[in-house]
Image 1: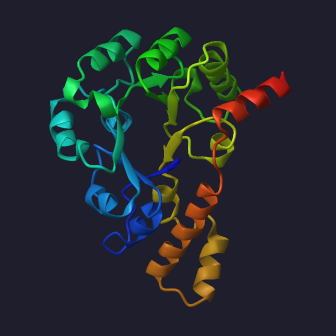
Image 2: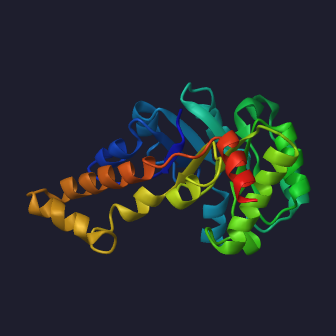
Length: 257
């Protein structure tokens, strides 16, 4: 069972660092930066494909208006046995109606591996509806819940899982977008989660975990070996945390009540 999906690209000597990151794990590939998708298909256990909506919005300060190119590109990888799921196109600035429209516009040939996004600021009614209609739903932090791990964010996550798993007794798989942090993954019954933690932090040899860099250099490692070593250590730390099962989370919630 693959719980951890590492976002790419992760650079270093034609992909040697990326190989360390996704070997024996999942790879989360963005339509905005699919540079290492072929490498991931070779060495990862599974891959998941992100529509790149957030990256596009952050770069252009606007939502993508035409998703034809995304679906044309997706067709090349959709039927690969390692492709587990993909994120249905969504909009960052739009409301529930616009996101529902994008779901309705999903070509039927892609439905089996498609996962819609429920944004945390959206209604719980929409969450329930999505979970009743789809085997997997992605949780995206947004609006007043955009900052992960705040008290407000934790309350919203607990309320969402209570609604679908306790009140409705649904068993939809949930993917946490940008939720691979152990302080998140270890506390919620996410089936899968992704983050760009390795892609962001491995190259920051002096800014992030400099003590690890010093230890590797003391061993005589080259700069490439330093990055590879940092990747291996940070990956192990991330993957040492696994999510509770739905039943375990329900029991914890009952004990805390």
